[in-house]
Image 1 (cartoon, rainbow, N blue to C red):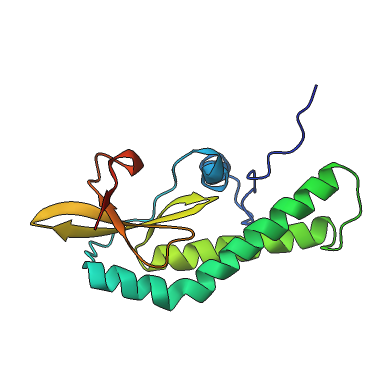
Image 2: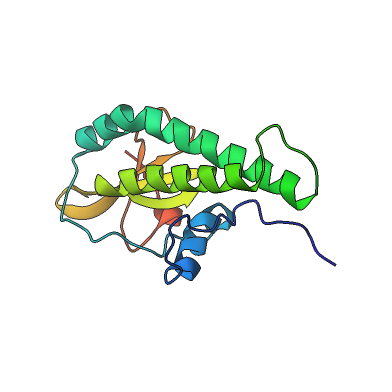
Length: 160
């Protein structure tokens, strides 16, 4: 008995399939998987102010990512259920996947670590009191309000 489509199983839009497994883990991030395909860390270390400014600057792109995620999830559910969708068909789903992937790559270019897509969870490498930390932004937050040690992850989050 099938449970239906996984709304977070967004296959990679790129023609290469060699990274398909790790890419699916990225797209399933909303189901609890962490981002497995990492962009090479350029060594950027953000101050809290820089992380907050980057979130503010990129907020339109983050909002687009959230909209694309919702549209793609809805369209894939309609397609899997054999229902017509006002969002289109298979071709439109592939277009949404490609646009979602492009926004994710744009965030990667800023050395942002994407830890989840549903909800969107972003980490920014930084330092606090001389110790390496990750400044943490979660979808719904007005700005960066949390941090955690890299080895503690989300469970180790503390208020700034």
